[in-house]
Image 1 (tube, one colour):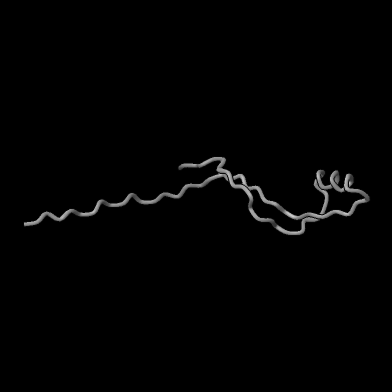
Image 2 (image 1 turned 90 degrees about the horizontal axis):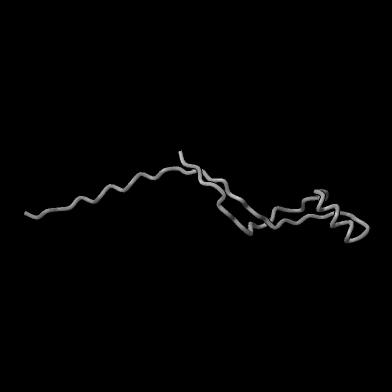
Amino acid sequence: MSSVRKPRPRPQAKVFHATMLVTRAEEWWIEAESAEEARALLASGQGHHAALGQRVHLELEELLED
């Protein structure tokens, strides 16, 4: 009589939610009279969003457990 081992049941997967910090490189444009003015306008949030960029950095900020 051979003893047959039953496989161990795998633990059931849980769902975890997380807060992620995502950095993207995006293209923006602005009309200005000089590069200095353009920098100031863009830094103040003015300008036109040209396209979503590629993700360049992901960082786990917080993992939420139930």
